[in-house]
Length: 338
Image 1 (cartoon, one colour):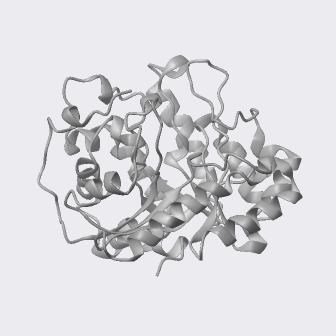
Image 2 (tube, rainbow, N blue to C red):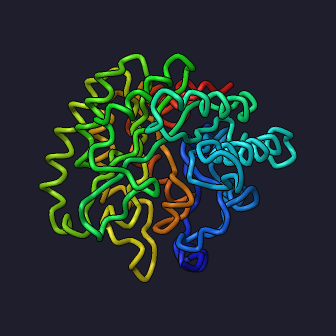
């Protein structure tokens, strides 16, 4: 897939509230991803977005299967990603690349279906992270339809309920590691069950729990919003669960931005998606919510500047203290960023 820079450049906006401090708690770094709209997203690429106008003071890297080791024990190959990202974080910490501290927090991965022995992988990840490692993501996105992409880990349908997976999950709390909950909306109930079973482990819901609206879900947005709302309310009742607000601009979310002659404006994003944000903030509270970019994945639909403008428009009427938490404070606290 070719990079869509020329298409994104068809819509430009002045950056709103350019001085507002922001922590972007969800982005990726990779190379050789030819199936993605950005096959390469490394230091110079993310710097171009960070310097687009918004005051991004820090970021958190989220695992994406990048730069695994080619050799060695299969379970330990994932350490290569953390070593790779920690190197970029060290470059950023030099200050030579600007004020933003890229990958100030690192979320890697580990195969929790190994059960309790995954603890050795977690310890190796912590060591490789150079003081920046904060937790893991083990994606469980699964759907029976061939039109919906499943996670690259090829999960089974109800992985959150699997006993061996939970034996692995039990290794997180004692190491003060968080867990990124990335699933599709029919799987949110499973994440709720997991959160209830492990109240001492912090779980961060990714991308609103992936509300689908393509394939067999196309044309059912209102029906899906109702069921999604019920499941989000139940999940929000778990005090150990936080929510990331973003990641709604992927193809399977079904808004179709990527198919238009021009990308959306920030106001169009607001008009199409604000109810997801408002409902989640209402249920979780600002102390447990944080805006995220999900770049470069969401780049398929909009630019970095447009995306953060949309978040600022959505919250323009909220108190300053609430906005500080949504844009910076909650993420900095949950990921223990200085």
